[in-house]
Length: 69
Image (tube, rainbow, N blue to C red):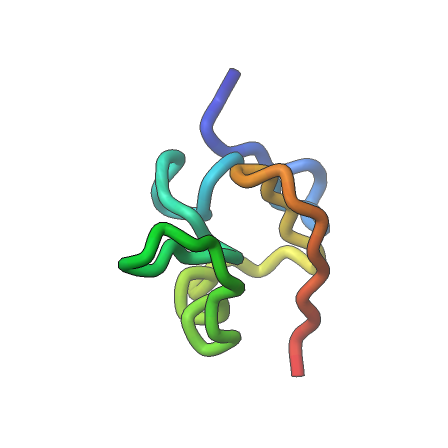
């Protein structure tokens, strides 16, 4: 399986984050080992350069939705 996949011009799929298959994208792990949501600014920064209307990822398998402001 590829690390990323463009499904038409509208959907971009990745496992971890758009640039790193092993990195959390929508969540981060604190020094205490607890998984917490990433700041929206960090999420947006990691999506820079992706023009798809929808980006799908599944690294943590925790359901979550983030929308552009």
